[in-house]
Length: 423
Ligand SMILES: [Zn+2]
Image 1 (tube, helix red, strand yellow):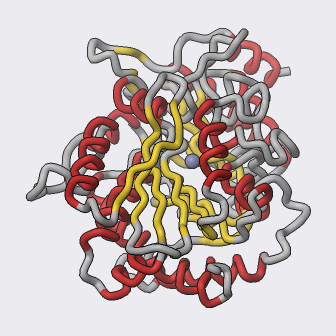
Image 2 (tube, rainbow, N blue to C red; image 1 turned 45 degrees about the vertical axis):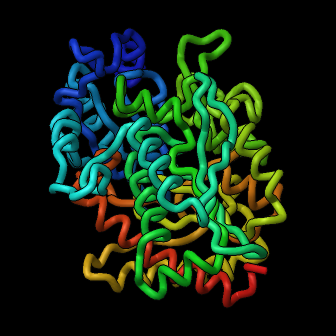
């Protein structure tokens, strides 16, 4: 009975955070909790609670590996939340006491850059695009612009192809499909820059042996919104026909096992809303069409995400089955994980299939490319960290994260090549 009363009282809501004059949503005293789940009842209670109220924002869904849920809680809700945790016997820990403090700190660059664009702070969409323009201007013989398509709000989704000659096999990178995962576009731009400027033999080899297709900011509308209005925005920005909640989880909107096995939500207010139909989002639809148009040109597909330090392979849609080439995917994954582990930072990544290692996630871009385009090397990379800062990774960690990506990528592509997947 007490649970029912608590749930009922949660349905009556105010907005999730307060807006002050800057027009940006503030997250003063919003805290992020790590919940250790020890049985199914506890999980059901947490899931129900988070689905009922805008005062909760799931940062990390439950996964079997750590048996943790990370959730951001509105301070107005904190009392009731703590009572509920006590009643349900859920052990917990505060990961972040005040999210706004991290957001404020995130605006402070970690150092000075000699050029106007560096990796000491996070950039807005127009700054990233201006940088991209400067790259096209500086390297006209090896770079080429491509357009994936148009976003719901009419922005162009831009990509860069880096090519050092004809007849090379392609590697496709899609980044920042989830708007709040800012480290992903920072990593993608760093990677582009290294491919073009690094003198390191292994990086030169990586750059010049393949054609690179890189989309640094895929969810352009959401990314812009995460900078100007709501730092914690994840989804696209297309309104729903009948519900006031906006946007779809772009990475649950692809037409491969769409909305199967509870790997996404049919609730428009959920952060993992799959859309009313597959490819309801113009961004996802455009990317699928673009990928089909170049499908004979690339062999490897990578999708950049944060956070958690995972390298995830298909399947996402089912934990009951594994792909035929799973052993190879694991071997490639081991190369990536070991290379990063051996660096000075000692950062630990875990590799495995999305559904068996993390949780069932259906309708993802990686699964679509793997299943529908038959590209047998496809991964989701979940960058730093494991929850201390979550989505608000401090600028001082941008470069280390990018260095890890470069080292991991060299190992990943080398092993992929060895196993004969790049043809
Ligand atoms: Zn993501």
